[in-house]
Image (cartoon, rainbow, N blue to C red; front, side):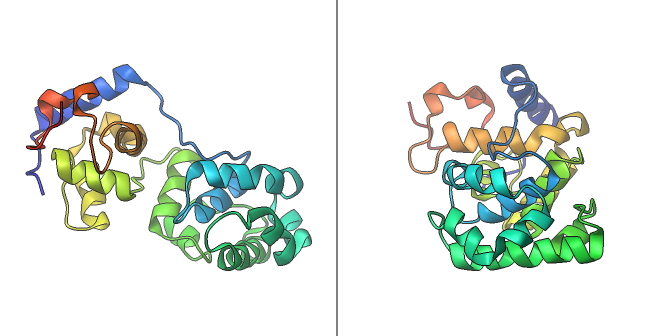
Length: 214
């Protein structure tokens, strides 16, 4: 685990991320808050591209909890059976849709606790929804952010909760709305797990990683 980078270095890192892409977007396709919740819940242990391929047909016929309940669990399975753990995920989609209808008037709630009470929705999923739909500077720490945070010193921590706190505590506040997207994309395409593309990295000179590649 690298040591936490100082404020001035973090500020320069995020200024470079911002200059490269001012408003990064999540890659999961959705049309409203509900479809975003479902897409993120389905993305556990699956790729965004794989989820998008499955949900295009699903959301064309069920873009509200009411329509999803009408489709039923077997109908959901037919659309998402290419995704890992599809049977359990289909059960959760139906269960969370029922709760949204019965307890929230069919609307997606905007508190972390309420979101995390939904089946299949953990803290990371809740943070994605709070950030992407409601504009809250929540930090959804996935394997990419955990790796990048610890490898570079941007937000080191022994677990995902510690990394989340490191982002909130150390990254200048004006960058926090987009911080997790910049870090995810950096980890997905540049600071990859096995052979990081250090030669193409825009923060190479600021990073603490000692085993930089060419």
